[in-house]
Image (cartoon, rainbow, N blue to C red):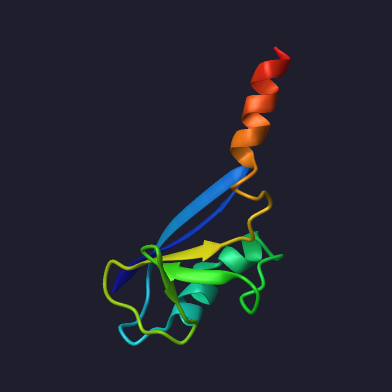
Length: 92
């Protein structure tokens, strides 16, 4: 079956479409995709994983067309972002 694996960083985004056996788990698909070779700092024990925006576990099964998403940690508090934008606008 065909599924997708997506990961994004500020400077690079990657979305792979791969073919996996029907009984594949999320972890097996991520490993098969090769994304861990391209981004060796990804730690599946630490990073959150989702399928189409819903949290998933590494041992969850997949359905045809699923898109696995690997979520990196948030580096900015979303509540402070508008304040920083406003402060920047005032400086001009």
